[in-house]
Length: 438
Image (cartoon, rainbow, N blue to C red):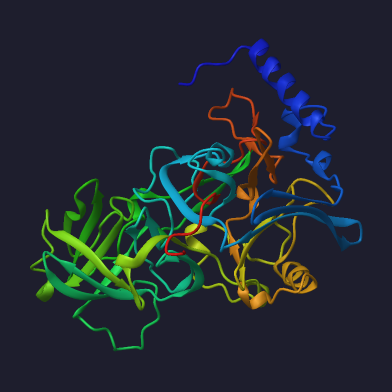
């Protein structure tokens, strides 16, 4: 049981939080009331633009949505010829502003979709959903074709990443395909391995009187589907040793969270899938993975989301973030040799400042001269945040309403607007030219 924090300590923490909020221009009367009403964050920001480093600028502007509603937009523009942009991820998580000021990073933006649950005891080995490349090593494979941000041959690119490729198990070459990929009826190829992972999970929502809802996953049903003709091999990343098979499940039933991903083979082709076998990923789509520096699967384009064609993004997130509702959103776009990140901010428990719908996002992009077909979603909601250096300190923008939920019935809410949500992935912008440039 978590011990009860004394009332005086709670009051001291709330008083410090209130002082910080008021210094930022938010007239919040009571921290605990923010769990029910966040209208205090509905403050239109004045337009401003600043150069935060050579090749990088930050803009803040309020955008009207009609009928008294608005969003505050925070935009980072990055000249790829002058600075380095990297997709980073960690299984233990981090706060965004902690990335700024380390390893030459002067700015950071919240990353792509990762697993989120309120159950600390049942979490996936690899929380990044679908494709993840970390420090030049592929950590997880995509279960379905999605757009992806890649640093390939030292160059940042964005494009559709096909959930298929090649790999070897103990030196034996195989083709693989994502488990969510559509396949013609009766055209299953037993020579091709099927990839499952954390993106196959189903997050469920349960009503909660204090927080509104609680998210979790039923461990008993969070397994690969049973198939008497199949053998499932759990593949885990072993530091300094690469990927290895760490468990084998004849007939299916492998825990989706047990390793970095699961490979399914027909029994006739499963001889190499034994515990301890090495697994080497060689190709994803048309990409040779040896040229990958970092990368993440990202969300659908703004145009696709506005049209409601977002297959593959709902069950593993619990609720579809691209439904027709206002929601804080984070966007990424590659426009020529300029990479653009944008947070469209909002507080869900406010009346006039809840974020933007997918259709409104498309309208705002078009208003700024961007083609919605080539602007993509990153993780939104309470994850939407930008951090950057200003003088000798880190500034943050977005998600200032964020509260850490109570861990017990007697614990209060904690305001964490400066830190924001614990993230599993992010994008850092650093000094120095990109790899592979002269």
